[in-house]
Length: 151
Figure 1 (cartoon, rainbow, N blue to C red):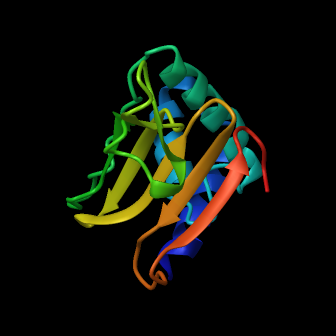
Figure 2: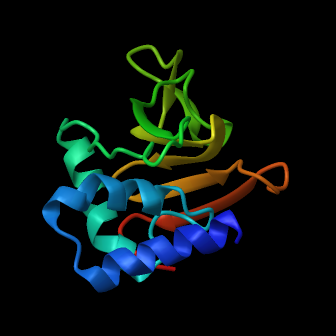
């Protein structure tokens, strides 16, 4: 079974099971691991919308124990963006004198599977941009969508 099939099946299982609030962190991680983007599955729109709102308000990234049944090397991590931590297409010069390298994205969530970078999802209040870097990925496949909308 491919990783994409497993991820999609997991997202659908969460949606059909009526996941509890305690599952929020794991819902978010599964959705962020989707190479098509975090809101490509309709079931992911509510938890991802909540995530972007929480992060924008300075709340912490939710937790999920992704290393169960003997697996290791699975993690998700959030970092706020900066001029040096930003995709080139979203960098610009601004600040008081216009010479400070800045980023129009607010942050990035990196998902690692088996100790390998799988996806990076950049976000701000208006849009997300997902970089799929997992197994079998072309050099870089990017899905950019308006935040909180399904594709």
